[in-house]
Length: 170
Image (cartoon, rainbow, N blue to C red; front, side):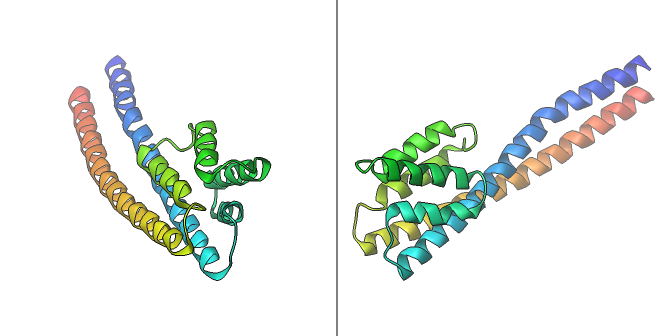
């Protein structure tokens, strides 16, 4: 009985880090999908209407949590401080939400996007949105491959844990 309990605790302890990492990867993947949607919204708004950067972030905030809170914070800061640019507002918002958006690549994409919006002409802003979309797509592919590799390693770990439990029970 003690062996069974020990094997069960060992299996749980081995599975927890893998589950946490899988959850983090899934969360990053969802955030990138939301960011892709937000960039498409910004691209549409910029193509159809002449809008300010603040309005772009307000409209992109409809893409879902946690990006909605981030974009609302950026828009609010741009509204409150007329001398603030999008890059500074994004940096401040990311610092305040560092626990929600942890992936470096995602943070880098957000900072590059904010840096380009509102500082150049219409065509340059459109190109920067297209470039951000391409970066997001590349990062999504990398995360999908990582997710696939992690699921294989989690399966192998589960198989080994099951085999170890079987040996202990015999």
